[in-house]
Length: 254
Ligand code: NDP
Ligand code: 8X3
Image (cartoon, rainbow, N blue to C red; front, top):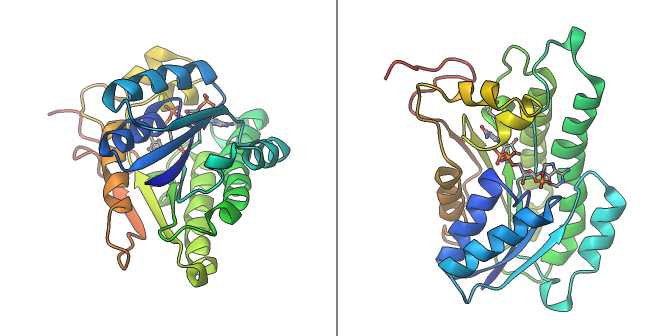
């Protein structure tokens, strides 16, 4: 059994990873996010898929370094050894050019996507010391490979994740810890609703007339990356819906 910590497990890709891993029957799950009621719902779904799956869920805001340190170091004894970290918690907020961008939105994206990922990773690495198959999965994005209009700060945070993913692979090489970046294009989750500050109509329009990726599509790839033999690591995976060519060029006519 490998113990997996998923950040941002209350929705979208994180929740899909929890369900997919639970169905594999070889993983124990540590699930965290800010919305604990959502995690409770997810735990109930996991129980239906695999009643034997061991799950521990807890509230965590990855932006708060002290909270990350205290919460993770106070996990129950049987949850203190971690094999896999899925750095998934993240968000985009706002969709404006830099000249009119909202500084609060910028702070939330940088604090969550970059600093939060670092805080959690720093705290979890000592908890991986005893693992024979330690693996960190970082959720990047097409936005970490290219920049598109109004993507500015979100793209910058995902470019930072791309750099940190490469840096982790270098720094953690002597420890034999695998490091993988999964970089999706459009995945239909709560992502766009959060980006547009709850404007559901605007969010739905993003996926209109096309078939986007689902959280499950990404979760399956993560399970695949985690299940490679010990000598094989997937460094970096860019995965798009078939109808998407770049961050902004999509075909809505099929
Ligand atoms: P969702 O909005 O559906 O899920 C985001 C998750 O992140 C939620 O569980 C949310 O939980 C959590 N989260 C946000 N802020 C914090 C915080 N401060 N502390 C802890 N958890 C937090 O979006 P996705 O599932 O799509 O996004 C998951 C990851 O995938 C993100 O890193 C995103 O950038 C990336 N991604 C998404 C793509 C897409 O098109 N959807 C494409 C490429 C990458 P809660 O609010 O309960 O805290
Ligand atoms: C989320 C996908 O295309 O909005 O990272 O950058 S996109």
